[in-house]
Image 1: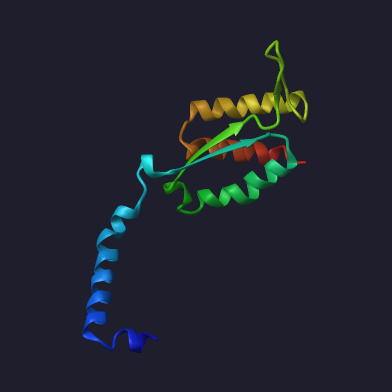
Image 2: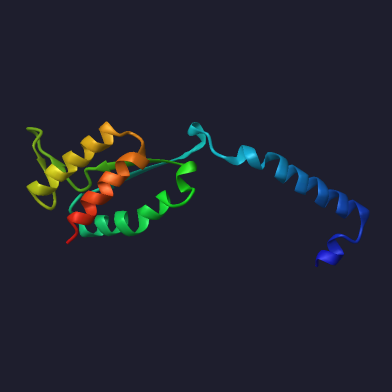
Length: 129
């Protein structure tokens, strides 16, 4: 196939042009803040499925370049319910509500996901079921 693609001078010229175009603009492919994909993860601090996802899967995003194109926002609220009198009830009990509040405080204190994720993964690892 490649031999046929380069058989005419026009095809060679088109290939060289495309190669130059890709290499010239590849530096501009890094996403700016407004170009990033917004990803909000609502999770429960004591949910075994959320814990497994955070500690085994989401952690891989921090070891790759995925965060350069993603605006990741962690929201430790998950399947909680807010009553009319503003009481919050968490699916896995009062301890989960407390841990959600602690993790939300860490997120507010260290807004950069790289900083607060270290704390959150520590909590999730230590409280795994």
